[in-house]
Amino acid sequence: MHSLDSLFGQRISNMDLLSGLFVVLTLQMVEGAAVKQEASLENSVTLLNHSMALVQRMEALLTLGNGSDVTLRVQTVSTDEVKVIQAHSLVLSLQSDVFDDLLQKRNSSNLVLKEGADCAAVFDKFIRYLYCGDISVRPDQAIPLHRLATKYHIWALQQGLTRYMTQHLVSDSQTGHVVSWYQYAVQIGDLTLRDSCLQYLSWNLSSVLQSAEWCSISDELLLSLLQRSDLVLQSELELYEALEAWISQNQPVDMTAESALRAIRYGMIPPQHLFRIQKQSPLMLKYYESVRDLLFLTFQFHAASPVQLAKYFDVNCSLFMPRNYLSSSWGSPWVINNPTRDDRSFSFQTQLGPSGHDASKRVTWNALFSPRWLPLSVRSSYTEHGSMQSTRTDNGQPRIIITPATSSPDFAGVSFQKTVIVAARQQGKVVVRHVFNFHQSTEETGDFLMDADLQRRTSEYLIDSSLHLHIIVKPIYHSLIITKK
Ligand SMILES: *[C@@H]1O[C@H](CO)[C@@H](O)[C@H](O)[C@H]1NC(C)=O
Ligand SMILES: *[C@@H]1O[C@H](CO)[C@@H](O)[C@H](O)[C@H]1NC(C)=O
Ligand SMILES: *[C@@H]1O[C@H](CO)[C@@H](O)[C@H](O)[C@H]1NC(C)=O
Ligand SMILES: *[C@@H]1O[C@H](CO)[C@@H](O)[C@H](O)[C@H]1NC(C)=O
Ligand SMILES: *[C@@H]1O[C@H](CO)[C@@H](O)[C@H](O)[C@H]1NC(C)=O
Image: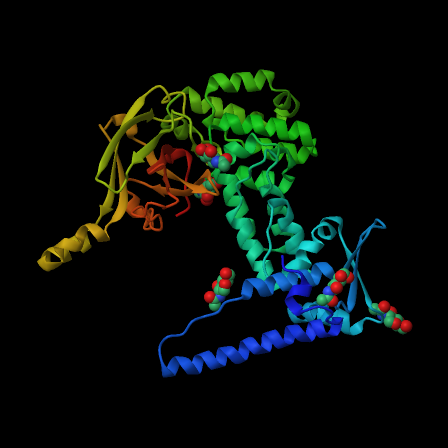
């Protein structure tokens, strides 16, 4: 770093230093005007760019405190710790109307600021941003910095931090931070950040369930996750076991434990596991009475054809609605190498349905991936104008269709909802980026891999030049899930 002496010549008084800065700024503006004029005379303009040096001078101004006219005394709430920063009212007022106001009202050369411990810890960083306009952020610093940016009306920093958080949901550490970011987003009413966190938690739930973060989630977040059908996880049993861990750790009131237990979709758990849960899970033994009706209904569901069940009982509940399970009876991963090259096909098997009556029956599915598929309407217009034929392959959209290899009378009363889970890289980690639901063709979704840009080698959807998909087939028993017309 340049020393101030070498930059401004020796023995410049403190006030000279500040006015020196003004001179530099003013000169740059005059120069800018001159350059513009020159441009209209002849077309060779050279930019002399010394903004890095200016930033370094500003940083030195803050670290050395030369010419400081205000002392910030940052008090940590509920301790007697005080952090002292020599600052310049000109810079603070320029950046923040809140500082401007405080500075105008102050009586002495001190300005006392009270901050929480987390904000006090990053206050230096925050002030440095006001001088230099850049900042390096770690995940654990995002919330206190966002708090400070909000309090002092540094809107660009606030927006930058929100964007940073939505793009850095993946955690390197076992502890994770999405849950605390979610709580913070709820507290400040930032719906975009809240929804990004919620989506990350829902779509990468398996890894969250295994992290230390899982047991730190609040009652509200737990219950709202349990309501969702778009959770991506190994199996419903995995969710039940994670709920056991959460309840034993958090010891919630009975009502919370009961609501959570009633949100488990027991119909999606095979009977052999249900027997074990019913007899051996301490959680189930404690709350058995409050879920007894659901378990009974589930055993009925496993005992005979669901169509039969519906003849005798009026059932309409989420108990029979699958979520996005990654285990093999529900679907299969599909890794497509060099996906833009040509059409690819793939076969896999699933269970006919989760009911004990259907679980041992297999259905074979054929999946077809086309990297550049054109809708019929577009294709016919090309044929009319033969000259446009050559551009055909450039304009198509990726598409997947999934059809059963054979038909069977067993399919009566069941519709097969297909889901394609698309993984992408985020900050070097593989995460679930999209969940597409459709009946037969991804055309139905309208935006399948629309922004994936698979042609680009650096597309974040290409992991070692492959597209990582997971196909799930969700059998829905119509007679048990009545949708409102
Ligand atoms: C001047 O240089 C800095 C850093 O080298 C760069 O970020 C900035 O964009 C440049 N400014 C112009 C006007 O080119
Ligand atoms: C800035 O302050 C430092 C330490 O107080 C001092 O050594 C240095 O001479 C000052 N520089 C200028 C340009 O006033
Ligand atoms: C400034 O001084 C006045 C009167 O001495 C006092 O009432 C007020 O609280 C002081 N303001 C600050 C910000 O210290
Ligand atoms: C996100 O979830 C997917 C599917 O369970 C998994 O493959 C991936 O490793 C997870 N990513 C992270 C960062 O946990
Ligand atoms: C059946 O349950 C689903 C999901 O809980 C709900 O959306 C739907 O409105 C219910 N239908 C009837 C007829 O009650």
